[in-house]
Length: 434
Image (cartoon, rainbow, N blue to C red; front, side):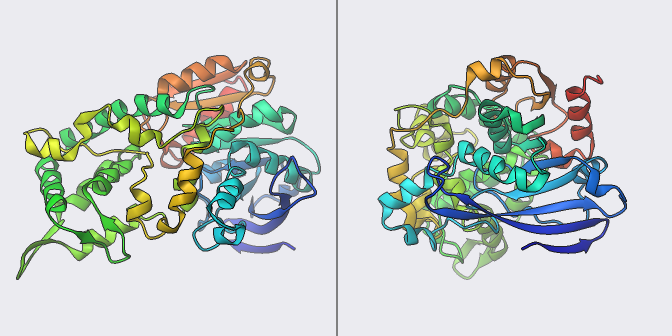
Protein backbone atom coordinates (compact mmCIF):
# COMPACT_ATOMS: atom_id res chain seq x y z
CA UNK A 1 0.00 0.00 0.00
CA UNK A 2 1.35 3.45 -0.94
CA UNK A 3 0.50 6.80 0.62
CA UNK A 4 0.64 10.03 -1.39
CA UNK A 5 0.90 13.55 0.02
CA UNK A 6 2.34 16.97 -0.80
CA UNK A 7 5.06 19.29 0.41
CA UNK A 8 6.07 22.62 -1.13
CA UNK A 9 6.92 21.97 -4.78
CA UNK A 10 6.77 18.17 -4.62
CA UNK A 11 4.42 15.24 -4.55
CA UNK A 12 5.57 12.41 -2.30
CA UNK A 13 4.54 8.77 -2.29
CA UNK A 14 5.60 6.43 0.49
CA UNK A 15 6.23 2.92 -0.81
CA UNK A 16 7.03 -0.36 0.88
CA UNK A 17 8.56 -3.49 -0.61
CA UNK A 18 9.27 -6.99 0.66
CA UNK A 19 12.62 -8.55 -0.28
CA UNK A 20 14.55 -11.65 0.80
CA UNK A 21 16.97 -11.20 3.66
CA UNK A 22 19.37 -13.39 1.66
CA UNK A 23 18.89 -13.04 -2.09
CA UNK A 24 20.67 -16.37 -2.54
CA UNK A 25 17.75 -17.95 -0.64
CA UNK A 26 14.73 -16.15 -2.14
CA UNK A 27 12.22 -18.46 -0.45
CA UNK A 28 13.62 -17.81 3.01
CA UNK A 29 13.17 -14.99 5.48
CA UNK A 30 12.07 -11.60 4.19
CA UNK A 31 12.57 -8.01 5.33
CA UNK A 32 10.79 -4.79 4.48
CA UNK A 33 12.20 -1.84 2.55
CA UNK A 34 10.78 1.66 2.69
CA UNK A 35 11.26 4.21 -0.09
CA UNK A 36 9.93 7.68 -0.79
CA UNK A 37 8.99 8.53 -4.36
CA UNK A 38 9.40 12.24 -5.19
CA UNK A 39 8.13 14.11 -8.24
CA UNK A 40 7.92 17.81 -9.02
CA UNK A 41 4.40 19.08 -8.51
CA UNK A 42 4.69 21.45 -11.48
CA UNK A 43 5.51 18.71 -14.03
CA UNK A 44 2.38 17.68 -15.88
CA UNK A 45 4.38 14.90 -17.56
CA UNK A 46 5.89 13.58 -14.34
CA UNK A 47 4.49 10.06 -14.85
CA UNK A 48 6.47 9.82 -18.09
CA UNK A 49 9.84 10.83 -16.63
CA UNK A 50 12.69 8.33 -16.20
CA UNK A 51 13.71 7.21 -12.72
CA UNK A 52 16.69 8.13 -10.55
CA UNK A 53 17.33 6.16 -7.35
CA UNK A 54 19.40 7.90 -4.68
CA UNK A 55 21.68 5.74 -2.54
CA UNK A 56 22.58 7.42 0.73
CA UNK A 57 25.98 7.45 2.39
CA UNK A 58 26.83 5.46 5.47
CA UNK A 59 26.76 2.56 5.77
CA UNK A 60 23.76 2.46 8.05
CA UNK A 61 22.21 5.85 7.38
CA UNK A 62 18.69 6.18 6.09
CA UNK A 63 15.73 8.41 6.77
CA UNK A 64 15.86 10.64 3.68
CA UNK A 65 13.58 13.25 5.22
CA UNK A 66 13.22 16.83 4.07
CA UNK A 67 10.75 19.64 3.55
CA UNK A 68 10.48 20.95 0.02
CA UNK A 69 13.31 20.45 -2.45
CA UNK A 70 16.97 20.52 -1.41
CA UNK A 71 19.03 22.03 -4.23
CA UNK A 72 20.42 18.75 -5.61
CA UNK A 73 16.98 17.16 -5.49
CA UNK A 74 15.42 20.15 -7.23
CA UNK A 75 17.94 19.68 -10.04
CA UNK A 76 17.18 15.97 -10.28
CA UNK A 77 13.43 16.59 -10.40
CA UNK A 78 13.81 18.69 -13.54
CA UNK A 79 14.16 15.49 -15.53
CA UNK A 80 13.61 12.52 -13.22
CA UNK A 81 11.25 10.91 -10.84
CA UNK A 82 13.39 10.25 -7.76
CA UNK A 83 13.27 7.29 -5.39
CA UNK A 84 14.84 7.90 -1.98
CA UNK A 85 15.59 4.44 -0.59
CA UNK A 86 16.02 3.69 3.09
CA UNK A 87 18.65 0.98 2.67
CA UNK A 88 17.99 -2.24 4.52
CA UNK A 89 18.16 -1.84 8.29
CA UNK A 90 17.81 1.95 8.19
CA UNK A 91 15.12 4.59 8.43
CA UNK A 92 11.64 3.13 8.08
CA UNK A 93 12.90 -0.16 6.62
CA UNK A 94 13.04 -3.20 8.92
CA UNK A 95 15.34 -1.86 11.65
CA UNK A 96 18.54 -3.44 12.96
CA UNK A 97 19.54 -2.07 16.36
CA UNK A 98 20.04 -3.03 20.01
CA UNK A 99 16.27 -3.35 20.45
CA UNK A 100 15.50 -5.49 17.41
CA UNK A 101 18.62 -7.60 16.85
CA UNK A 102 17.92 -9.85 19.89
CA UNK A 103 14.92 -11.10 17.90
CA UNK A 104 17.51 -12.90 15.75
CA UNK A 105 18.90 -14.80 18.74
CA UNK A 106 22.27 -14.41 20.43
CA UNK A 107 25.38 -12.57 19.21
CA UNK A 108 26.34 -15.31 16.73
CA UNK A 109 22.93 -15.23 15.05
CA UNK A 110 22.97 -11.43 15.06
CA UNK A 111 26.40 -11.36 13.39
CA UNK A 112 25.24 -13.84 10.74
CA UNK A 113 22.19 -11.65 10.09
CA UNK A 114 24.33 -8.52 9.68
CA UNK A 115 26.48 -10.09 6.97
CA UNK A 116 23.49 -9.38 4.72
CA UNK A 117 23.74 -5.61 5.12
CA UNK A 118 26.59 -4.79 2.76
CA UNK A 119 26.71 -3.28 -0.74
CA UNK A 120 25.96 -6.56 -2.54
CA UNK A 121 22.67 -7.02 -0.68
CA UNK A 122 21.69 -3.39 -1.29
CA UNK A 123 22.27 -3.84 -5.04
CA UNK A 124 20.13 -6.99 -5.02
CA UNK A 125 17.43 -5.04 -3.17
CA UNK A 126 17.48 -2.39 -5.89
CA UNK A 127 17.16 -4.99 -8.58
CA UNK A 128 14.31 -6.70 -6.74
CA UNK A 129 12.25 -3.52 -6.49
CA UNK A 130 13.22 -1.92 -9.83
CA UNK A 131 10.62 -3.83 -11.91
CA UNK A 132 7.91 -2.74 -9.46
CA UNK A 133 9.01 0.90 -9.75
CA UNK A 134 10.05 1.32 -13.38
CA UNK A 135 8.14 -1.50 -15.03
CA UNK A 136 11.48 -3.12 -15.85
CA UNK A 137 13.24 -0.15 -17.43
CA UNK A 138 16.79 0.59 -16.24
CA UNK A 139 17.25 3.60 -13.99
CA UNK A 140 19.90 6.13 -13.11
CA UNK A 141 21.60 5.67 -9.76
CA UNK A 142 23.13 8.54 -7.79
CA UNK A 143 25.41 7.20 -5.08
CA UNK A 144 26.75 9.45 -2.32
CA UNK A 145 29.74 8.18 -0.28
CA UNK A 146 28.90 4.56 0.68
CA UNK A 147 26.11 4.88 -1.87
CA UNK A 148 28.93 5.26 -4.40
CA UNK A 149 30.46 2.01 -3.14
CA UNK A 150 27.06 0.42 -3.79
CA UNK A 151 27.00 1.96 -7.27
CA UNK A 152 30.37 0.38 -8.16
CA UNK A 153 29.01 -2.93 -6.85
CA UNK A 154 25.93 -2.35 -9.04
CA UNK A 155 28.14 -1.91 -12.11
CA UNK A 156 29.86 -5.16 -11.11
CA UNK A 157 26.76 -7.22 -10.41
CA UNK A 158 23.83 -5.91 -12.44
CA UNK A 159 24.80 -3.26 -14.99
CA UNK A 160 21.76 -4.19 -17.05
CA UNK A 161 19.66 -2.42 -14.41
CA UNK A 162 21.40 0.93 -14.95
CA UNK A 163 20.96 3.56 -17.61
CA UNK A 164 23.52 5.87 -15.96
CA UNK A 165 25.76 5.66 -12.88
CA UNK A 166 26.61 8.84 -10.97
CA UNK A 167 28.94 8.82 -7.96
CA UNK A 168 29.84 11.57 -5.50
CA UNK A 169 32.68 11.05 -3.04
CA UNK A 170 32.30 7.30 -3.20
CA UNK A 171 34.76 5.45 -5.43
CA UNK A 172 36.05 2.56 -3.29
CA UNK A 173 39.26 0.66 -3.68
CA UNK A 174 38.46 -2.57 -5.47
CA UNK A 175 40.89 -4.69 -3.49
CA UNK A 176 42.21 -2.79 -0.45
CA UNK A 177 41.93 -4.43 2.95
CA UNK A 178 40.56 -2.28 5.76
CA UNK A 179 44.15 -1.87 7.03
CA UNK A 180 45.11 -0.24 3.73
CA UNK A 181 42.11 2.08 3.97
CA UNK A 182 43.06 3.33 7.44
CA UNK A 183 46.78 3.60 6.75
CA UNK A 184 45.80 6.03 4.03
CA UNK A 185 43.17 7.71 6.22
CA UNK A 186 45.14 8.79 9.29
CA UNK A 187 47.52 11.10 7.39
CA UNK A 188 44.52 12.72 5.67
CA UNK A 189 42.84 13.23 9.02
CA UNK A 190 46.01 14.81 10.37
CA UNK A 191 46.00 17.27 7.47
CA UNK A 192 42.38 18.18 8.17
CA UNK A 193 43.18 18.81 11.83
CA UNK A 194 46.14 20.99 10.88
CA UNK A 195 43.92 23.00 8.53
CA UNK A 196 41.36 23.43 11.32
CA UNK A 197 43.97 24.71 13.77
CA UNK A 198 45.35 27.06 11.10
CA UNK A 199 41.84 28.49 10.70
CA UNK A 200 41.14 28.59 14.45
CA UNK A 201 44.48 28.70 16.29
CA UNK A 202 42.72 29.36 19.59
CA UNK A 203 41.27 25.85 19.38
CA UNK A 204 44.69 24.28 20.01
CA UNK A 205 44.60 25.27 23.68
CA UNK A 206 40.88 24.69 24.00
CA UNK A 207 41.15 21.11 22.74
CA UNK A 208 44.13 20.43 25.00
CA UNK A 209 42.22 21.75 28.02
CA UNK A 210 39.20 19.56 27.34
CA UNK A 211 41.37 16.50 26.76
CA UNK A 212 43.28 17.14 29.98
CA UNK A 213 39.99 17.41 31.87
CA UNK A 214 38.79 14.11 30.43
CA UNK A 215 42.03 12.36 31.35
CA UNK A 216 41.56 13.39 34.98
CA UNK A 217 37.76 13.24 35.37
CA UNK A 218 35.10 10.62 34.77
CA UNK A 219 32.51 12.35 32.57
CA UNK A 220 29.22 10.67 31.74
CA UNK A 221 26.96 12.54 29.34
CA UNK A 222 23.21 12.93 30.04
CA UNK A 223 22.30 9.94 27.84
CA UNK A 224 24.76 7.65 29.64
CA UNK A 225 27.59 7.97 27.12
CA UNK A 226 30.99 7.83 28.83
CA UNK A 227 33.01 10.71 27.40
CA UNK A 228 36.63 9.57 27.27
CA UNK A 229 39.44 11.48 25.63
CA UNK A 230 39.34 9.05 22.69
CA UNK A 231 35.64 9.72 22.26
CA UNK A 232 36.32 13.46 22.33
CA UNK A 233 38.98 13.04 19.66
CA UNK A 234 36.48 11.21 17.45
CA UNK A 235 34.55 14.47 17.07
CA UNK A 236 37.06 15.12 14.30
CA UNK A 237 34.62 13.27 12.05
CA UNK A 238 33.08 16.72 11.59
CA UNK A 239 36.15 17.93 9.72
CA UNK A 240 35.23 16.07 6.56
CA UNK A 241 32.15 18.18 5.89
CA UNK A 242 31.80 21.62 4.36
CA UNK A 243 30.78 23.26 7.66
CA UNK A 244 32.51 20.81 9.97
CA UNK A 245 35.50 22.92 10.99
CA UNK A 246 33.20 25.77 12.01
CA UNK A 247 30.89 23.44 13.92
CA UNK A 248 33.83 21.97 15.82
CA UNK A 249 35.10 25.45 16.65
CA UNK A 250 31.74 26.56 18.03
CA UNK A 251 31.56 23.40 20.14
CA UNK A 252 34.99 24.02 21.65
CA UNK A 253 34.71 27.74 22.34
CA UNK A 254 32.26 27.53 25.26
CA UNK A 255 33.08 24.10 26.62
CA UNK A 256 33.58 25.05 30.28
CA UNK A 257 31.55 26.81 32.96
CA UNK A 258 32.57 27.85 36.47
CA UNK A 259 30.87 25.89 39.26
CA UNK A 260 31.29 25.79 43.07
CA UNK A 261 33.44 22.71 42.53
CA UNK A 262 35.61 24.31 39.87
CA UNK A 263 35.49 24.29 36.04
CA UNK A 264 33.16 21.71 34.52
CA UNK A 265 32.11 20.86 31.00
CA UNK A 266 28.96 22.84 30.35
CA UNK A 267 25.56 21.27 29.88
CA UNK A 268 25.40 22.83 26.42
CA UNK A 269 28.73 21.24 25.44
CA UNK A 270 27.67 17.87 26.80
CA UNK A 271 24.32 17.99 25.03
CA UNK A 272 25.91 18.80 21.67
CA UNK A 273 28.69 16.24 22.15
CA UNK A 274 26.29 13.43 22.88
CA UNK A 275 24.20 14.25 19.82
CA UNK A 276 27.35 13.98 17.69
CA UNK A 277 28.77 10.88 19.35
CA UNK A 278 25.74 8.66 19.91
CA UNK A 279 25.01 5.88 17.43
CA UNK A 280 21.45 5.44 18.66
CA UNK A 281 20.06 6.72 15.37
CA UNK A 282 22.44 4.74 13.12
CA UNK A 283 23.90 1.72 14.93
CA UNK A 284 24.51 -0.15 11.67
CA UNK A 285 27.20 2.39 10.86
CA UNK A 286 29.22 1.18 13.84
CA UNK A 287 28.42 -2.49 13.36
CA UNK A 288 29.21 -2.95 9.67
CA UNK A 289 31.52 -0.02 8.94
CA UNK A 290 34.66 -2.13 8.64
CA UNK A 291 32.73 -5.07 7.17
CA UNK A 292 32.13 -3.05 3.99
CA UNK A 293 35.85 -3.55 3.23
CA UNK A 294 35.85 -7.33 3.82
CA UNK A 295 36.34 -9.26 0.57
CA UNK A 296 38.43 -12.31 1.41
CA UNK A 297 39.48 -14.61 4.25
CA UNK A 298 41.22 -11.87 6.24
CA UNK A 299 39.29 -10.53 9.23
CA UNK A 300 38.93 -6.79 9.61
CA UNK A 301 39.82 -7.30 13.28
CA UNK A 302 39.16 -3.72 14.47
CA UNK A 303 41.38 -2.35 11.75
CA UNK A 304 41.07 1.35 12.61
CA UNK A 305 42.09 0.66 16.22
CA UNK A 306 45.10 -1.46 15.27
CA UNK A 307 46.32 0.89 12.56
CA UNK A 308 45.95 3.92 14.83
CA UNK A 309 48.77 2.48 16.97
CA UNK A 310 51.07 3.00 13.96
CA UNK A 311 50.47 6.76 14.26
CA UNK A 312 51.55 7.68 17.81
CA UNK A 313 50.87 11.38 17.19
CA UNK A 314 47.19 10.56 17.78
CA UNK A 315 47.92 9.43 21.37
CA UNK A 316 46.29 12.11 23.54
CA UNK A 317 48.38 11.45 26.64
CA UNK A 318 51.61 11.84 24.67
CA UNK A 319 50.35 15.02 23.02
CA UNK A 320 49.43 16.56 26.37
CA UNK A 321 52.77 15.56 27.88
CA UNK A 322 54.50 17.64 25.20
CA UNK A 323 53.78 20.84 23.36
CA UNK A 324 52.08 19.37 20.31
CA UNK A 325 48.42 19.86 19.45
CA UNK A 326 45.82 17.27 20.30
CA UNK A 327 44.88 15.45 17.09
CA UNK A 328 41.28 14.60 16.40
CA UNK A 329 40.38 11.40 14.58
CA UNK A 330 37.89 10.94 11.78
CA UNK A 331 35.65 8.31 10.24
CA UNK A 332 36.72 5.25 12.20
CA UNK A 333 35.05 2.71 14.47
CA UNK A 334 36.78 1.41 17.61
CA UNK A 335 35.96 -1.31 20.17
CA UNK A 336 35.78 1.24 23.01
CA UNK A 337 32.72 2.77 21.30
CA UNK A 338 30.80 -0.37 22.25
CA UNK A 339 31.66 0.34 25.88
CA UNK A 340 31.07 4.10 25.92
CA UNK A 341 27.82 4.30 23.93
CA UNK A 342 24.70 2.88 25.62
CA UNK A 343 23.15 2.32 22.18
CA UNK A 344 26.04 0.00 21.28
CA UNK A 345 26.90 -1.71 24.59
CA UNK A 346 24.47 -4.63 24.15
CA UNK A 347 25.99 -5.28 20.71
CA UNK A 348 29.66 -5.54 21.72
CA UNK A 349 29.89 -9.31 21.34
CA UNK A 350 28.10 -9.15 18.00
CA UNK A 351 30.60 -6.57 16.80
CA UNK A 352 33.50 -8.74 17.97
CA UNK A 353 32.18 -11.66 15.92
CA UNK A 354 31.86 -9.50 12.81
CA UNK A 355 35.41 -8.20 13.31
CA UNK A 356 36.71 -11.79 13.49
CA UNK A 357 34.80 -13.05 10.46
CA UNK A 358 36.88 -14.68 7.71
CA UNK A 359 34.33 -15.65 5.06
CA UNK A 360 33.71 -12.36 3.28
CA UNK A 361 32.82 -12.56 -0.39
CA UNK A 362 34.04 -10.18 -3.13
CA UNK A 363 31.97 -7.06 -3.71
CA UNK A 364 33.42 -5.91 -7.04
CA UNK A 365 34.14 -7.63 -10.35
CA UNK A 366 37.24 -6.05 -11.97
CA UNK A 367 36.69 -7.87 -15.28
CA UNK A 368 33.12 -6.69 -15.59
CA UNK A 369 34.09 -3.15 -14.63
CA UNK A 370 36.83 -3.18 -17.26
CA UNK A 371 34.16 -4.00 -19.85
CA UNK A 372 31.61 -1.49 -18.51
CA UNK A 373 29.20 0.03 -21.05
CA UNK A 374 27.01 2.06 -18.66
CA UNK A 375 27.59 5.84 -18.94
CA UNK A 376 29.23 6.75 -15.66
CA UNK A 377 30.69 9.80 -13.95
CA UNK A 378 32.19 10.44 -10.53
CA UNK A 379 32.98 13.52 -8.47
CA UNK A 380 36.25 12.97 -6.60
CA UNK A 381 36.81 15.51 -3.85
CA UNK A 382 40.48 16.35 -3.57
CA UNK A 383 41.82 15.28 -0.16
CA UNK A 384 38.41 13.93 0.85
CA UNK A 385 38.74 12.98 4.52
CA UNK A 386 36.47 9.95 4.20
CA UNK A 387 37.51 8.39 0.88
CA UNK A 388 41.13 8.28 -0.24
CA UNK A 389 41.71 10.18 -3.49
CA UNK A 390 44.47 7.87 -4.71
CA UNK A 391 42.28 4.80 -4.13
CA UNK A 392 39.37 6.52 -5.88
CA UNK A 393 41.40 7.44 -8.96
CA UNK A 394 42.87 3.95 -9.23
CA UNK A 395 39.34 2.57 -9.29
CA UNK A 396 38.24 5.21 -11.81
CA UNK A 397 40.92 4.03 -14.20
CA UNK A 398 39.68 0.45 -13.76
CA UNK A 399 36.09 1.22 -14.83
CA UNK A 400 35.76 1.46 -18.58
CA UNK A 401 34.29 4.77 -19.71
CA UNK A 402 34.02 6.29 -16.22
CA UNK A 403 34.66 10.04 -16.36
CA UNK A 404 35.91 11.84 -13.29
CA UNK A 405 35.73 15.38 -12.00
CA UNK A 406 38.44 16.00 -9.41
CA UNK A 407 37.77 19.18 -7.46
CA UNK A 408 38.87 20.90 -4.27
CA UNK A 409 35.86 23.23 -4.33
CA UNK A 410 33.86 20.90 -2.11
CA UNK A 411 34.32 18.54 0.80
CA UNK A 412 32.80 15.08 1.04
CA UNK A 413 29.26 16.46 1.23
CA UNK A 414 29.56 18.34 -2.05
CA UNK A 415 26.33 16.99 -3.56
CA UNK A 416 24.39 18.61 -0.72
CA UNK A 417 26.57 21.66 -0.07
CA UNK A 418 27.15 22.50 -3.73
CA UNK A 419 23.55 23.10 -4.72
CA UNK A 420 22.76 21.83 -8.23
CA UNK A 421 26.31 22.23 -9.56
CA UNK A 422 27.64 18.79 -8.66
CA UNK A 423 24.73 16.92 -10.19
CA UNK A 424 24.81 19.24 -13.21
CA UNK A 425 28.46 18.41 -13.79
CA UNK A 426 28.02 14.68 -13.34
CA UNK A 427 25.14 14.52 -15.78
CA UNK A 428 27.10 16.53 -18.34
CA UNK A 429 30.10 14.22 -17.96
CA UNK A 430 28.00 11.06 -18.29
CA UNK A 431 26.38 12.48 -21.43
CA UNK A 432 29.70 13.58 -22.97
CA UNK A 433 28.53 17.19 -22.97
CA UNK A 434 31.81 18.48 -21.47
